[in-house]
Image 1 (cartoon, rainbow, N blue to C red):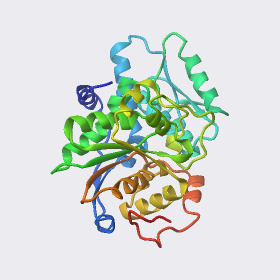
Image 2: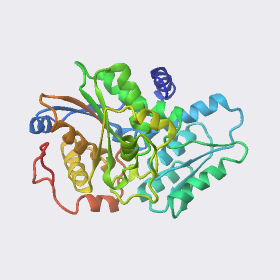
Image 3: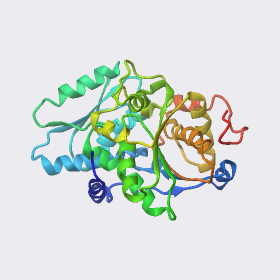
Length: 332
């Protein structure tokens, strides 16, 4: 497991390259839910997602430890690929990103726009095999999307910034879980800065490998990429490094597609931010947890990203959910 000093070191490396994103609230939402919700808006981060933090830290750690870097490679369904492409470009390092052909078109195009070569393959297993093979070449280094200490430490800087900004303590911190890099870094930062706060993950029900791993105590893997709106959480399995953190979480919730749509619409409306479903699904986990609480709670939610293509927008907005006001008991 990483420690908090690694997150602090990561922040020193990346702070001149990234945005210190704001922490926002909606008074209307707080009134409707009866609790104080704070949002760390990583949808306003470089490349539109928290992944910029881990990618930038990993590239810099690589530069510190390797004399000759011919190329960096990464496997990604979208945001991590953008992050590595962007981070590599900051230091004039060529990058090749392997992505599944069903990845978000806007994320694939953005990855190319940062100067990376993008290789599309039909199945997630092919993507993972291709990046491993590429990394065997001398001078080529693989930056994994989550199962990497430097990546985890970089992701933890988001929670660190937010917790240092919010006064009077937090009762719980929520973040989405795909491969587990964000929730792992969030756990370490929270344990150091708000030791009494619970740290809780949310994951799509359709791709619940991390939840099953958390429940069983052993890493569980999916056989195929899940069919979910949460395209930032379509990993087949968490890693050994992230599982070491995930099994220490205080709770874990899975989210169906309908509440994911509902909360994507409402967060976009209330916060006036372009929030992607992977971020918004966390609010259903928040509501599941709040139903069990007997007093007013103060909650931090990490909004992981805001990269949504036209096809995803059509799926999210095919039905108007804004006629049904949010509550902890109801969704569209």
